[in-house]
Image (cartoon, rainbow, N blue to C red; front, side, top):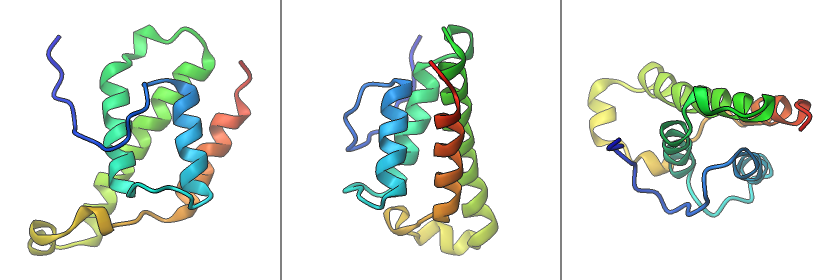
Amino acid sequence: MNWNWNETTIDFPFSSQNLKNLLNTVCRKENRFSQFEFIKWCDNFTMAFEEDKASNELDEMAFGIARDIECQWDLFLVNTYSLKELQNLDLSKVELPQDWFIERLKQLNEIKR
């Protein structure tokens, strides 16, 4: 299948554990990458990891969380900025509320392997 990959500076393989690690970094505000880079990584993760390939509950949850993160990003942009603003917006400067990431990390941490 030919995926339309997003170019991102985050060069981590797509796995539930890497999603958890990246979310942890974002929640601690220790990320050296923009939230936009993280969103693109999440989008790539969902493209690489189809729902039917989930081998356990953690993988299934990670897929859903990555999908939610990218959807929240899109909704945040549309509900926060006008079309004119979006056309000129530097997406690397946009930040979602920190609580959203913290909540997603909590959900991932609740799942046992």
